[in-house]
Image (cartoon, rainbow, N blue to C red; front, side, top):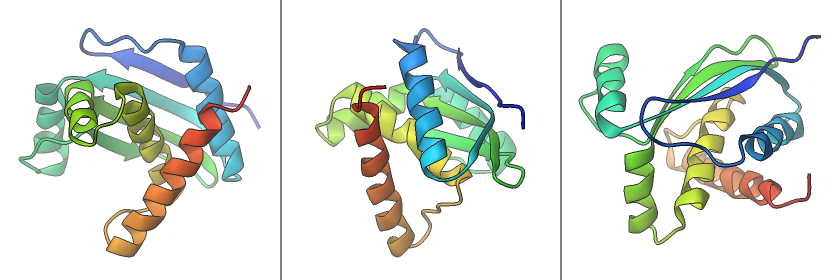
Length: 143
């Protein structure tokens, strides 16, 4: 099976530092869930950009930190993950977290959705949070 690619794009002035380290981390997370790496695109943007996507494709008139479009086929993860860096920054302040830690949480949240985890019910939200914490810890493991 041919391995896909994890790509990072920006629709604002945000630039992900050390893309390769993030890519390896995401690949390790996907493998840890017994899934395969397809084509996953991260698109960093501002609140207005993500709000427009929320309105256009989901008919939600709200601001959010992440919208993921899951195109997974079987156990091979594919999709687009849009992240508002403005919203991540606000959430980091609100939760008294470092920006990069909150960004990692949001980045991996999208991948966990592709892996089949949901966050609609309280029980699902608790599992999602536990998985996010578990996967964030993987970032610090020597690659």
